[in-house]
Image 1 (cartoon, rainbow, N blue to C red):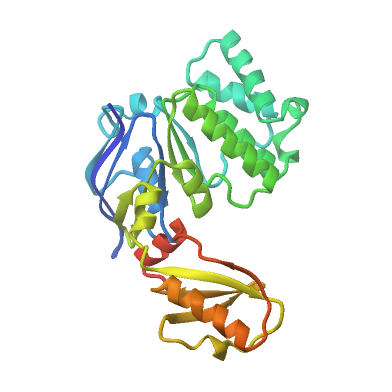
Image 2: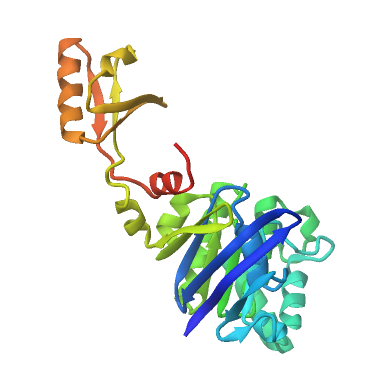
Length: 305
């Protein structure tokens, strides 16, 4: 069974079409990435999938349950972590989790045991009785996640879950996502962090200007742009970028302490760079020919450089 089946979703606000004929199919057990630039329609789509917004047209089924026809049953099958957390600041960490568990009809003994397990898992056991308004952003986000996963939802939807988090909180969030997936939850993740999507997701869809422009595995999407190769090279000395002029080099730009050289012929470009360095008595500190990344594919598909 598919965890999510969305067909022909459309949503307009006035004269602006935010989502235009979007269809998504997410198999049960997947970690599915939903990527797109700001304003592409990601959050509007998520709000339609979760029943917060009613689409102008199209249907959404969560494990076979129509979100429009039976919204309560559909929502009981999902845990949602919105971009802006929805925890109650004047409740303690533990009280937030227990309240959410009660909404889902969990018995008291079960919800108390589950709350303590999650607080320990998210490294918050020592702060469980403190008011959430005293917590940092990263800790608040962990409480949002705790509330979403307490009922062990078959579908977990995360909208930009790591935005603005420190490294420690980000790792905890990602480890929790992986664990939930291992325990049987299907994951739908929207993110701007393409490294995150590449590391977590088995499939991704890219949305741009309200339409899906590509769907596939990260590796498949990266292979689509094998022609867009580049070389990274670092010299010990400062150099004049005019030295990079050669028909095989289409672009040269400073990239931190390195130069990124775009080329359609990496072999010829490397030979040119080595020959140039020898002629100019330059010392090469490092030279690499990275494979195309998910970021390269994303930029191409969304009309970037």
